[in-house]
Image 1 (cartoon, rainbow, N blue to C red):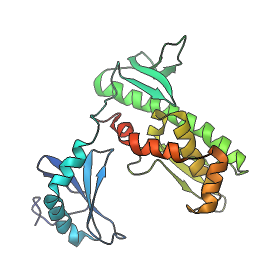
Image 2 (image 1 turned 30 degrees about the vertical axis):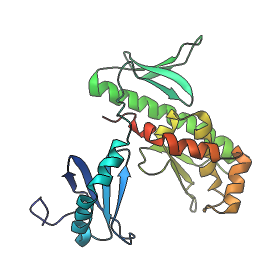
Image 3 (image 1 turned 45 degrees about the horizontal axis):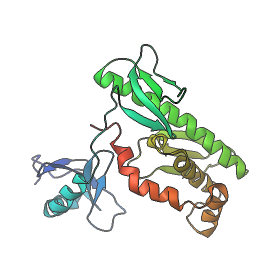
Length: 246
């Protein structure tokens, strides 16, 4: 029996030695496993079925040293607050309070630009986040249009999301429905070359729904060797996920 006075359920959260562990059912899972959710700053314990969630909880308790070590490796949260500095597609900006609709003031004369949002505290943070997501959608749309055009493919529908485990995804079109590419809004915080690589990667899936040699050949044709950008995401991805946390 779980601490909730009932059997464990998908989505239950446990506190184990000060760490938050979320239980998840994944029917395709072959075994009990743990992974770090960098966006939510918690550990996910996955089980193949609801009846095995108690095993997943016990497995997490047995691996508490591993859990604490992974959480300790996360960068400190970086809330969206006035004075915070960040980069949008490589350009420097400072968050600041401003009346009216949240808006971006471009860099001028060597000085960083400003991202203006009204209010204080959570109100300011929500406004700043909406602005960053708006800028992310606009920038990623431009990159996607260019790469889709280079491949001779129609521009897909483009959306941004707060993805937890991937930087982008591509859903092929069916019938009259267009293809859909989704991106993590946090790509706007990465260097332009990194965001451009992810856009090329997803556009290559418009032709090749796999990661075989022909797929990587398309990516190489679009952006050259992707190894430096892939390495950047592995090294700095956790820092991007810390933005807006806390």
